Length: 212
Image (cartoon, rainbow, N blue to C red):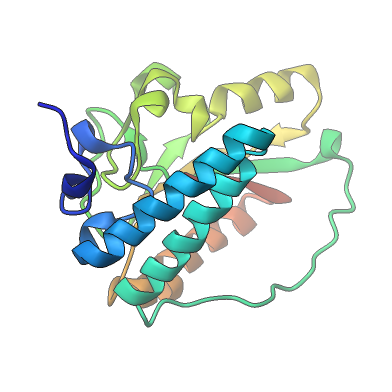
């Protein structure tokens, strides 16, 4: 059944309705949803005329940022981060892979639940065919076709084999990157430091994070 634009403002993201999953438009009252779609339409027309589609991306990002601040007004933001120069040649560096895309090892690990601050330890030698994804807050269709979209383990193994990277860490780490409310402190104070300690113990020089 076709979905009308006004219905998109009421429906939660789902596998059938992933085109608008980046912005949780079902939280908008009808008047504001109308303003959103009118603005999106205008941005798309202007982008079609001049070929600059970054305007649409910026429009969606601005709305997403605003809605996230309303849904989770206590969300933690970082205005700055300590600058750490990467001084070792990449060909000598030990690299770890992390993802917030909900990757886990099929059949041997539990899938994530919504708003899940836990993590999954994934051996860096795990075949890509053994990996699965659970995440309901982005369109996983492309990642399900090729896990490297959000967890480029095969590409990093190739780079290590070619000598472009010094080595890969023994383990990679999967997270479910939609975490709100009371689970944010747990992520920051418990699970993230646990993973950081494991990376330090494995003498990792840098981490690549596959985001969604």
